[in-house]
Image 1 (cartoon, one colour):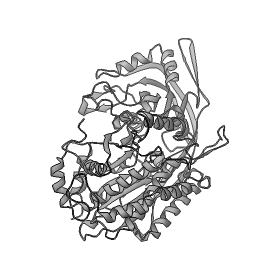
Image 2 (tube, helix red, strand yellow):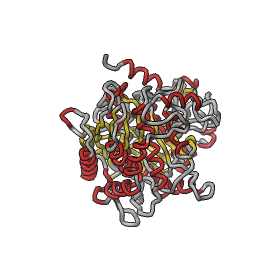
Image 3 (cartoon, rainbow, N blue to C red):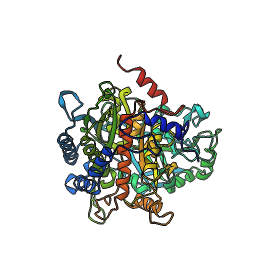
Image 4 (tube, one colour):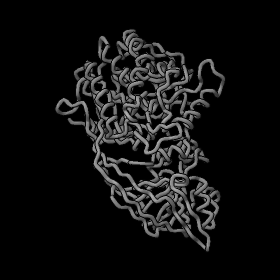
Length: 564
């Protein structure tokens, strides 16, 4: 399989790398400077990771929900660490924190929904069958006799000659939408690899552009990449959005289980599987179901605030130091549940997601600060907030960058660590998108490992973490998931462990610190990311998107708009 588009030959790469100076030699794989290796071995250790994770995931921080006391404690801890390492504030007034203004909305959703047609009726139950949320920050949300229309995937993609709406007037309707994007044809939507068209936030935005009153996504575990309990935990309680959010909005957003969706469509005299089969083709037409939805939700609306914590390590080159490589991780999680689970726990500690990534950020900052000579470019460390609410902190940072977007050379995002042991593979999310792949591959070879594409391409991970926010303003980056080829374990063991973690711990109170984690693989990955980031900061060429990539135009625009 060809991993890279327009990939340099390794002979050419070796000549290029020979020009970098100080960081590596001309051989391939890439061999880091011994001083950089020494800093990694001293600072990027299991002990360093465990110490930070243990604190950030402690019950005292109450799950680090946006704007909560635990969120403030986490941010204060990160800022203190940055200051102790000698990083510099990059924001006005020597501030460490970039405030991120939010609006929090808690919708009081009806306990049941009733539907009737042709003398038959159906009652659906909140939480068990559906999860709804307000689509707007209003104290009252009302949907009155809105017809439900099945719209397939709800996608408009001119580049694929695809339009699920076919010009139908959907104003005031409630759209029933399939998750994911078409996957049967490798020539459409990149086959099994999920694109942004398959993400839930695209679905709601697409419905809003049609003037719909609401949108309900049909949940299946394969199409979402996680069980319905993740929807139940992630979409219950207070939901946040940026206070300055604009643009069209649906009144209500919802999820429906596969079973409830089948029952609803059956009441309308249709077969959901037949409708889904029809939606796999370009000639699909929206299908009005002849059912109407009415509901009223009172909402508690309040202003809230979190912050991104930013610290800068200035580069050594007078000119290139105007640019920065960004190391990024989100510091937030889901906070407190209203009710305790069977084990008596209501704290979403978020140890892996993402105390582990924040711990990695702090460990890398220490390693970089200890270098005897800094790379040419500056390094920006960004602990961003409200990721679990829709990448809000990184989105705000992208909309209000501390440096011009064209001067953000690359981003290395860390969202979760490997806890299952050392792996032979380096699993790169979004492999093939940018020249950063060449650096990852070179350092992986030095580690005697092999780069592999996304192990779960159908889950759309590239669009589910914070590097996506910076990609939208043109910044290429690196984002890894845990490898699955675990040394000393049988084939398939690693993948099974990750799937079990998603099933039993992802967005659950059970995502807690465990002293029995095997963090040797985490240290492998962390050292790789550290070296890749430093290499991007040292080489004279800016990292680039591969020709034709979806974010290439944003990069060109950002460079064009740099101050003269």
